[in-house]
Length: 98
Image: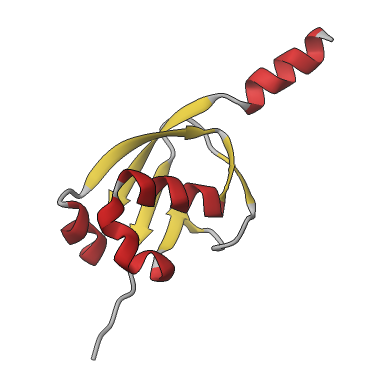
């Protein structure tokens, strides 16, 4: 029983991650970086939802945002993530060029 309780507590622990905003996301948020407390065990979709919830100005481009954790792109679905304190989450908006 104690092992199950410890497992539950480990799964429910929040971690503080560093959020980096680039290009249009930086303009919309008004900052180049921030911190966010999020459950250590989450999904890519939940991570995006938490960021947009904290920064509602991102809602207008949320369907086109790409996230990277520790400089590795993550898929925009419900793929499980295991976040560690201090992880770096990049918010990358659509980029156009010519």
